[in-house]
Amino acid sequence: MKTALVHDWLIDFRGAERVAEQIVQIPDLRIEKVFTLLYNRSEFSDTPMSRLPVEESVLTKVPLAKRLYRQYIALLPFAVEQFDLSEYDLVISSSHSVAKGVVTRSDQLHISYCHTPMRYVWDLYHLYLRQMNLVRGLKGNFVRLIFHYVRMWDYIASRRVDYFVANSNYIARRIRKQYGRDAVVIYPPVDTDKFRPQDTRGEHFVTVSHLVPYKRIDLIVSAFNKMKIPLVVVGDGPDIRKMRAMAGPNVHVLGRLSDEDVATQMARARAFVYAAEEDFGIVPVEAQACGTPVVAFEKGGVAESVLDGKTGILFPEQSVSSIISAVQRFIRHEDEFDPALIRANSERFSVDRFRREFRDFVLQKYEEFKATW
Image (cartoon, rainbow, N blue to C red):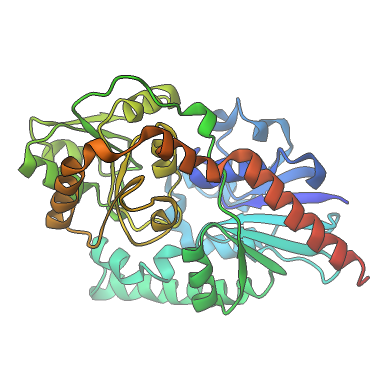
């Protein structure tokens, strides 16, 4: 069995890349090569990904592609279809964008680990248009026409996949809605060994996130400005200047930190706060691995990892008032949260569990598929 892994792009090391990193380390899958639209080698120089041959796409010939790749959305479907995977028996795609759209033959098995259907052309389509101020006008019409084309391609591309694996029940429902396909749920791996409870906690709350609009860090900062409770914001991204401008004297925006410093911030916090509608949400599980309660928006994958009233507090709306109410509820019951129980809950999402479940699923489907040829 010869296996290839296709991942959308390897630019930053985030949640999807953590999943891909674990997939290539499963020996029984025999992954020989990684295909990706764009590859930032320096970001992955000390990871298992760097030990495999990595082939980039034709996008490398596009000016500033590694910095502006999101601006080239119309080219992504074409680029991913140019990968020649004909020498492989098994193709595994790790996809939140176009990786699932690779072209394979009928005698090749394609299994896609779907982090999410493309947010910007499906569930968050109108939100993205509003945020980019593209609801009206000639430019807006042009962008919406491109998104319409990509949405049609994305649906067609979903038919090329033999089996979908979803990272949560929430995403499995979206795959069913948008692609008309069933998916088995295998939760992503969380390296809980890197995150441990500490004996002492500070007075601050913490949030850790890529600072982009849909993460709704603005709501968290506004809520803590009103409550005047200490908040630490960890992360970098396009919205970092906006967050620093919004932050009151009780809110500290630290930017990007090392994994060790992130773990320390989470372990010493009173609670971790999260307002995004997340596909799964690895960071809230990492916080629980520190024994830290999580205050989070109850929609999305986070609702599957946080046990309301036991390992955290879930709030019903993405609003400042809803966050304030949830934090106040947490403070009233703060002494009732057991760090050992919170830590134990996080271990449901361990690396070993992911590797075992994903390996077993892939090998079973490969044996079934091979028996038909």
